[in-house]
Figure 1 (cartoon, rainbow, N blue to C red):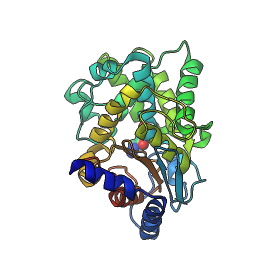
Figure 2 (spheres, rainbow, N blue to C red):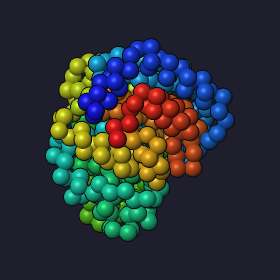
Figure 3 (cartoon, protein in one colour):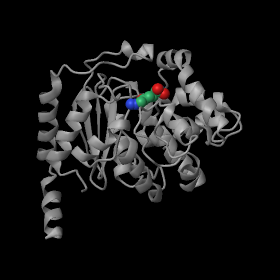
Figure 4 (cartoon, protein in one colour):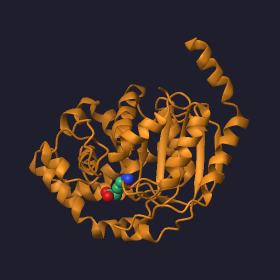
Amino acid sequence: AVMAASFVQAAELTEAVIKQALSEAYQKYRTLDEGKNADYIPALAKVDSDIYGIVLVTTDGKVYTQGDIKSEVSIQSISKVFTMALVMDQDGTQELVENMGVDATGQVFNSIVAIEQYQGAEMNPLVNAGAITTTSLVDGKDYEEIWGKIAREYDEFAGRELTVLEDVYKSEAATNQRNRAIASLMHAYGHIDDNFLRATDIYTRQCSVGVNARDLGIMAATLANAGKNPVTDQQVTSAKNVPEILAVMATAGLYDDAGKWLYKTGLPAKSGVGGGIIAVSPGKFGIAVISPPLDAAGNSVRAQKAIADISNALGGNPY
Ligand code: DON
């Protein structure tokens, strides 16, 4: 019976069914008026709130799109996933487990209380403290070399050369005192070495990389396809790391709302305050939506709704 059920699902994932699911979700949430752009990074408040694009990429490399797939927003916290992949390829997966851990904090993404609770352990690479620490672990003799590795990793996941949105970078660099405090604490507790301010700056730069919905869809599909970009056919990250990356996304990808999200969709996902969310149906597809207005947890309102509808229509929930 289990075999039969999965055959039925596979047969249902036809082009017509996918197109229909995208088009319905796009229309349904187009006029939704909920949430608001992030404004604690001043440049993000100025981004057009009406940008709305959906991209689904199957593991055989077919790209389906709806709406705005050209406008770029800053990748923000979605970047954390790809720096995590880079460090796992460099050092193995245990390094991150031993440093900041792979547990949910139940707190907001930039929580200082969560650091204090276990002195910077028992958290994960997707909250700010863990992510800045992860960035600090990328090997390189100087800023340029470290940045080059991070940028190349993201380019390979997306299958094209991405660029930093300098206005976003400057805006966040001028206002990231809280992240600098987080990095100082992670240094004080022995998780980051003396270069904690450089790590914060590189992290700020990685968060400012510009992506459109198509880029994010391909990045998500690379994770759905065991680390091999299904459009370029390049093995970007080791297949053996992918289950662990997806586990952390399922645990903490939508921060303090990760439980609710998993309950509704079953999908490992990652949000960013630029308005993007990626989600992964392992072996089937990656999906991304960009729409800047966010809810109180810092997750795009339209993106959550559209992805949940589409995945549920396509049998994306692995549970
Ligand atoms: O560090 C920050 O606050 C931002 N660069 C990224 C935060 C973020 O995207 C949280 N996600 N929903």
